[in-house]
Image (tube, rainbow, N blue to C red; front, side):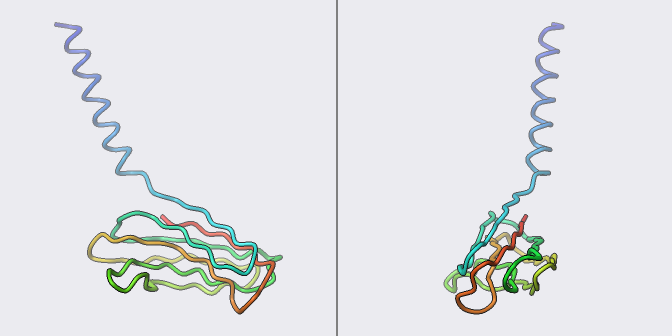
Length: 123
């Protein structure tokens, strides 16, 4: 009887632990662009997204950090945008009533700009 009670308590404790830890975790993706191309990183279905981005002080150009949301039939649409000169950073958030897919795009300003060093995270 004592052993059965111990096993039951252990199983219930593990169930509570895993259910709490899975709801408290956030998806975080880090990006880095070092050339002329834009880079993106997706996160899963959520009601909102939060992002932070930084354009390194040695970066050769300004960079846009763009939070985008999935819009069925229209692809990705802008939800929030930050413009960062070299040596600056920004944070932002976007919200939606229903759960949708989100992504963060780092886009160097202008055409054919090499030497852009920026990174960002979305969760």
